[in-house]
Amino acid sequence: MSRSAWRNLLLLLVFLGLGGAALTIEKPFAERSKEYVEYGPLFPGFEPTRVWGIRITRGDGEVDVRRTPAGWVVSSLYDYPANFSKIQEVVGRVWRWRNDLAIGKSPAKFDKMAVNKQQGTFVSLRDRSGESLVEFYAGRIGGFDPKRLPPGKNIDPDAITFYVRPVPGDEVYLINEFLLGTLTFQPENWIEKEAFHYAQEDLVLVEIEKGQDRLVIRGAGEDWTLDGMEFPTDVNKVGQVVSSLGTLAVADVADPSRPLSDYGLDSPRWIATATLKDGRKVRLLIGADKGDRQTYGKVENGRYPVLFLKANLDRVFLGKDDLIRKALALPIRQAKSITIEDGGHRVVLERDGGAWKVSSPAEISMDPAVISRFVSSMDRLAHEGYVESSKDLSRFGLDPPAYRATIQTDEESHHLLVGSPNEEGLLFARKASDGWIFLLSGESFASIRLPLEEERGE
Image (cartoon, rainbow, N blue to C red; front, side):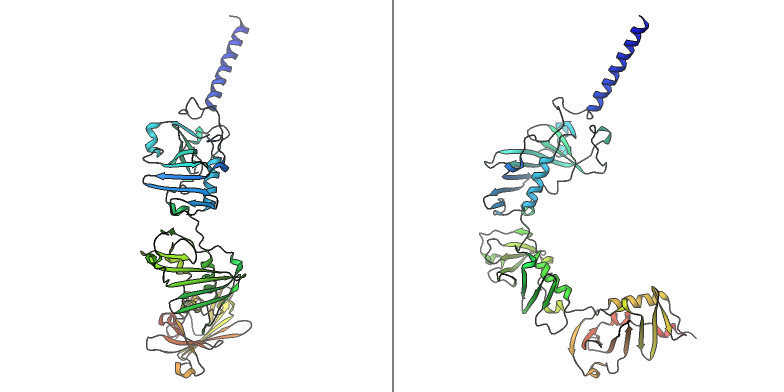
């Protein structure tokens, strides 16, 4: 054979070798079926706008959501209004799924991948007539070998993927996202969670009736005040009542065909009324408890009795005592000095940069950690309840007081006075600026006393 013939043969072999390598790269999954042709949508031709129903089944659990002229409802839960955002999420994601992470046809592994009737979650998206548009099994969380990704396909190795098997068919795919939590088969997870349908900015009045307590809260936006309170109120808690009412979420739905007396709603024990700018009123009725965690409720004139989490209701239905301002809010963070007069001893602390130190008397040496704990306790100090507003301070051991703290800021002095204990061992106290007599616990009082005797030098 001539030299040119050998050269041509060598070039042919190199060409065939490169061609074989290219074919190997284009087919990254050895298990992929021969019928598989090209990458594209997992469900070609699927149009989200044609979806009028979703059915999800797993074991004995099933949820059926359908579209009606009035909107989407959970037909498997008394036709209660459905969460449209959740429906949009599911349909939109299925429409975006692609077929570029194919695992192959492995019926023997369906049980392990949970893409069969026994282990998987079966999902059917249906049209207006009830015919299936898309059906698939959603399986367990899966994994993949990054070395076997298709050309140009890059996925974070830590990404969450799960197995999907379209029906009919035996081909299994990995989907690069986490949708298993959304594809739940419990009907209560598909309902519209919002209990009240009003804009928070339209709210002008909230009335809370709980037993003998009746709260009337007025305002707008974030500025709310409580009517008829004898003692100072905690404005943050008042605002919490308003915001918690507006964001109250439905946990589940009860059978609307049963009498209201079955749920304790024929004679509600608590009532919340929201009044809007246009004069409309939205009233929430609260009935009996269901177990330890849920309570029945119903929007007045609404069709459905529903269930709320007790923890959420507890943030709305507060009594007057719950809204009393307990934090003393002493201006510790603005203070330049703190003077303590306690049992005949007097000590002055001054701020030195970001720390505090004893400035007087000079013979006292105090551990900086002790001073830091004292200052922190003064900053967080709270009382146990108000007693009254009185000018006769001697009745409470406050004229003169047994203990006085003077907090000096750039502008003014603030005084905390502590007097004698009551029969329960709580101590009468007073802030000189507002005149209210309140009670301090023994533990709180101990936290704002400096160990003057122990720390005094020789």
